[in-house]
Image: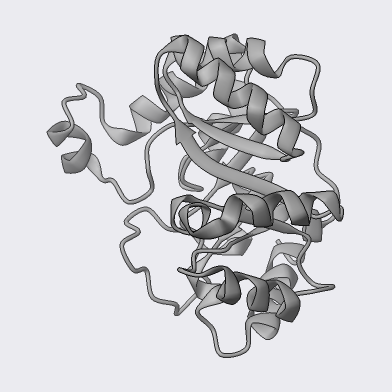
Length: 232
C-alpha cells in the first residue's frame, strides 16, 4: 500500500467511549486529519455506522477488529467489511486466518493488516501467552507469513519496523501503534517510539490515539505530530 502525504500517514485512534465524543474529535481535527482508527470501544457504541458515514464522505477508516475465527467466519466478516468502504482492517497473523481473509478481499481496495505482537506486550507477556519466541522474533516470523499470504500490511511496534521493512519490502504497509511524542504518558504501552523515529524506522502509517484525543487542544497536538513526522 503506497503512501502519500504525511497527513495520509497519520491515523488518529478514536479511542473514546461515545459517538458524541468521536464526532466532536473529528470536527476539531477537520482539515488536519483525514484518517481515523475505530476499534472495539467505539465500534460497540455506534461506531460502525459512524465509520460508514465517514467513509462515504471520503474519510479513510482503519477498522481495528483483530479478526480471528474459523476460516468461513473470517471470510464472511471480511466480505461484509469490504462493502462498508473501509480502508484498512486488522486480523491476527495466523496463516489460515490470513489466507481466508485475502481470498475474501480479493479484487477490493481493502488493505488487510496482520497484527503481529501487541505493543502492550513485552517478553514476559509473550512467554505467559505460551509462545516460544521473544516479541522481536515472533514479529519477524509473522511478518514473513503475512507476506507469503498476500496481506496488505503489518501491524507492529515501530521498534521492529526497520526489521519488518527489510522482510516485506517497500510496498506493504507497516502500521505502527504505540506512538508517543516525547514527554507524553506511555499509558499501558510498553514498546513505544516517537513519531520522528517511527518514520525513520520505516513505518508507513502511525497510529496515535490518546496523545491526540486526550489533549486539551487536539488540533495543535496533531499538527505538532505531523510536523515532527515531516522533519524525520
